[in-house]
Each structure stands twice: as structure tokens, then as C-alpha cells.
Image 1 (cartoon, helix red, strand yellow):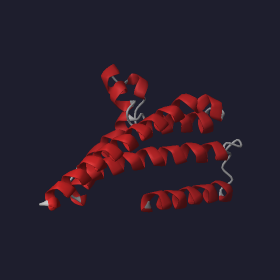
Image 2: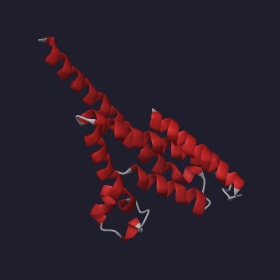
Image 3: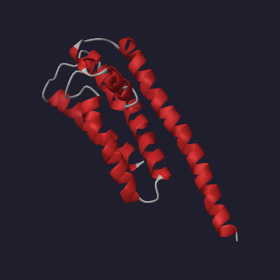
Length: 152
């Protein structure tokens, strides 16, 4: 929850700078906000899942950094994803940042609309839903294990 609140603050700052510096957004700020919200939820559910599966905060942070660091390269942020090997493109499709950046480019660079980002948004929704369901299942088994441990 703190990360969701922090993300909302960062997004509000983005909105403020957009108007302050008169950055043209082609009336897509609402669409960008929706896409950013879906992205934050997908990433948050990945973090929740990792936090449930690992024994302590330090290990969870280490694993999440191992995931986050290459995601900048694999997402197409630094190099075009289309120029990477097919197997790398398949891995990149499981990273929410890939889909967020694709939608971001469509809205801001290409001047597209929300309908053109549907596949990217749905990919982020699916990643979020799968991670949320896996989190619920993992939490169920973890609680069951703890209850058995203290039942004796």
C-alpha cells in the first residue's frame, strides 16, 4: 500500500510538470493515468508475490532488484525489443514494463488513443491477475504451514 500511495504522488508530480512545462499530451493524460494505474497494480502484485514466497524483507528486495534491473533492457526501454532474439522477446512479454512502455509510446509519441493500447493494457492486467491469484494461493499455504507449526 505505501508503494501505491507513493506511485500516486509521483504521478501527480508528473501531471504537475506536464502542465508547468506545457508538454503536449494530446488529451491523453487520462489514458496515461489509467495505463500507469494498471502498471502500478501489476508491479505491486509481483512484489507482493515475491514478498510472500521469500522468508525475509532483505531476500525479497534482492530478488526484486534482480528482476527490476534487467527489465529495463528487456522491456525495450534501452534497445528496441524488435531487434532482440525471439526468446528474449518472449521473456520480455512477461514483464509489465514492456507493455507499459509500448502503451506509453502509442499515446505520447504516436499520438494514438486508448483503444490502440488495449493489448498492452490487457497484458498488464493478466500479469497482475496471475500474480494476485498466485499471491493468494501462496499466502494460504504459508498461513496453513504457520498454523500447523504453532498447533503443537
